[in-house]
Length: 477
Ligand SMILES: Cc1ncc(COP(=O)(O)O)c(C=O)c1O
Image 1 (tube, helix red, strand yellow):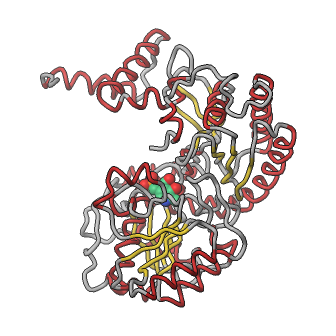
Image 2 (cartoon, rainbow, N blue to C red):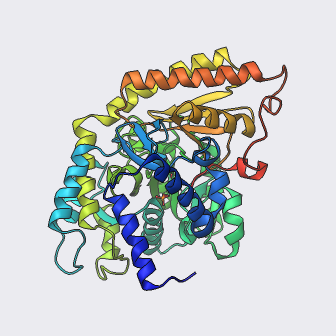
Image 3 (cartoon, helix red, strand yellow):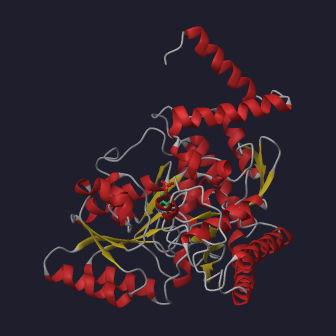
């Protein structure tokens, strides 16, 4: 309903007061929580109210995100959560890393956005830094604001450079939800409603080099060679799925043999998450296009990029605005990116992820041996970890119960029974041990309440707050 200008002004003033830190009494906080829930219902999407455990599992008052630092997230009531979700991978450097916040505030005080005409120094600086830390001949960067747009740009670049229009992707792959990036999506439920508008893509099972080779040969035989093979070095949304050794090397060889670009989607795996700077580093492979996002903005600003070689980039030179965007490469985001790389290197986040991930995965494996009826599998690389449960309802119950114990995790987009664990890479060892303790308490509680032979958890599980259809997917936005 349209309000008068006076009333709208009043509304905005009230929210600005809260943003500026106006103190509220307890009953005012409760009223604000109720107001936010009502606004979600009416003005955002009421689906989220049954979808998010921060509403369904947080007792009388929904959890409203308010502040955070490092690995600790606080709601407006001051309740604390150990963050093992990492904002789906954006908080690799932790929440509000002080040096990243400082770089952004320093730039904010000088100038927030760009004129679009003068040269932007931090865009050039970040591109130069990325050229210095990425594999092979990768040297030229285009900056945007989310992973989806990085993939979108990679698709356009691959089409432009190769003159081909058919792409190859993997089953279970996740590359975003715009019409271009959605074409590469390896899961039906997100594709089907938009199917006829999607571009031409073939799919191969992830990690199967023989199937990959056969697909390349087929495409070649019928004269529809691929512009690009788009692949995550470790599938994130599919549940931290690690391919067998040698897979990416084989993919590199096949791409080179058939004139296809290898696009590494490192939106989630990049900047140390898997225990190396890049996921492709585990295989010593240089892609033709590298897509980055999430943690590139240091958990402070939205920032993504696609990076390629000067030879491939040449097709963008004659008309440099053939692909362009207003906000991409803005000074705040690039300042965040420069600081994010600095923190990644200075704190050796890849090394920390490798060490902590190995320890954590070993401990999870031991726990799995103690509770095989609850925990089916644990896997992953570095601190991109996945826990597999025997059913969606047990997976959901695990995430919900752990939330009540003050640890934030979530399902993956593929299924609620696959839970992801993505803490800050610098998470303190003691905090990681605490997470492990709370995971074990949760797994034990589920094990004790299960009937013998029960693999669904239904007997032990009070009616889920989500429908079974909702349980199939995570709360991935
Ligand atoms: C591997 C990968 N690619 C692309 C995307 C899309 O990124 P965004 O949600 O920032 O658009 C995601 C998001 O989860 C991702 O994990």
